[in-house]
Image (cartoon, rainbow, N blue to C red; front, side):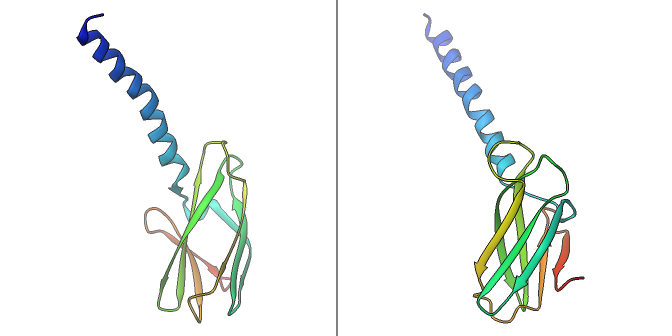
Amino acid sequence: MRPRTKYGIIVSAVIIVVVPVIIGIYMFNKVVNPEEIMVTKSEVSSELITLKGGFADSISRYHGYNVSHNNNSLFIQIKGSKLPIGGSKDFNISFSNAYGKVEEIYLLGPDDSKKKIWPNP
């Protein structure tokens, strides 16, 4: 086999493997728009913060969250994907309240959109 042909085959094989992996990773870690999220229960105490909910559509899957704090407000980004691989339709998030007095909780979207979820709007 000529060296150029061998090089072309190797590059093609790498592209065929790497591109879908990169696309899959991006899709699994996508921050979901707050309008696509339904929070069914939210509780805040001095020790624990708990959120339960799911997605408005039937295909999205939960894959994690990020939390940030500013003044007395918490901002939560829910990560999910439209791929029906792994994850779950519903989420049950619970973490210790290391933020002190929390007055409001918002869901944040990928484009800085936000939706107040606690106290009930």
